[in-house]
Image 1: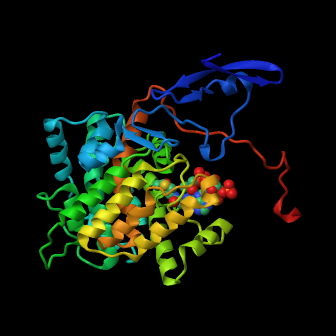
Image 2 (image 1 turned 180 degrees about the horizontal axis):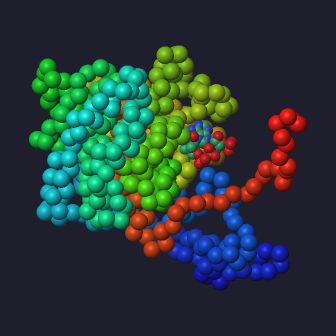
Image 3 (image 1 turned 90 degrees about the vertical axis):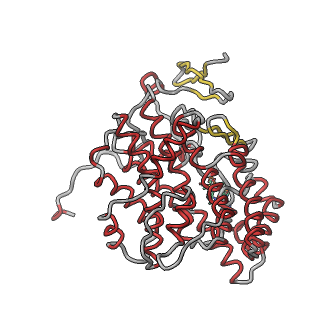
Length: 428
Ligand code: ACO
């Protein structure tokens, strides 16, 4: 049968509907499985589990396709800008001039953070990781805006969304300034979204700061490429946390923490550490790849492999090209880029990586660009978070509008001891 799957349990057959997405991908709808058969499914890492229907990004991991709201990532990377992409993800359509101007104006005018908020950073140690500072600060926004926390109120949602997209740049820049002991720079409304971020990070009150258009364009591109990636670890975290109907700031704060891990967005920082270690130890690319294949501690080939992409990651192709362009325009020679290219060439021909279908992912080359413009590795994942923000928010909004919306609550197979009696302390 074309549109049902059959499952046979204890000699009885059950039929389960098959649902199909607009690009032909199919899923067995198991929502009645437990009530009809008494069974649940077990799927560690959710590798075979669709947690929702979504109309935001489309990924075909075998063909290396990524589209936001139907538009290929290559086109957006070439023709769009980050705030326009943010609007597209959030609203489902490309903004006309009037809609975009309203959005841009609102984001631009919400970048300042409350003066008292500066003390928040003062409470953190100087070496606080920016991701810890950002997740805590984003969560703390809910204490400053108790008037707009209702996830069912349209006006509350709009203002929270605009505040988040605007203030996350300021918060990330303040986290960086705090770590280097420099004064916080107030946002400048005459600059672009990315220009302002660069100014707040790299400007200082003693000198004028000119935004370099090459750097501005490169960061804007990276933000576009990071803007959404369907049900990954951090987006699923935002959905799961948000499914309790907690406010948006709290859900996004949780997403930032999920992104921080080295298996996810934190890989961009790890890639640079790996390249630097190879350079410092005078190791050849082949030597490192052999260590990675043996699974030596600390020798995973970071920035390689992806749960969904099994052919190539289209973002990585765009970033690699941008990396060469930017470094050439800036006149930067990077030993780290040479090592990255060598590692990629070796790994792509090596049976271990070929058999496991491991390719460079979005994090493999992005850190080389961030480094070339003077960003410390600890800030890489915070920049990723700024990019991913519209995607997280779009996922959160879509979940709240979904007629099938339910609190997220997976089940388990219990493997502990059978019923056991309590033993009083003195008898143990
Ligand atoms: N280096 C060496 N071996 C690897 C790598 C790697 N980077 N990635 C996967 N493998 C191996 C695994 O050891 C495993 O081998 P085995 O079958 O012999 O046990 C096999 O390839 C399959 O890998 P899994 O870890 O099972 O794949 P999974 O889909 O669970 O994990 C992940 C994907 C986490 C991205 C993994 O490839 C990885 O750790 N990569 C390095 C970290 C990284 O770059 N993360 C960023 C991902 S993109 C993002 O989140 C923004």
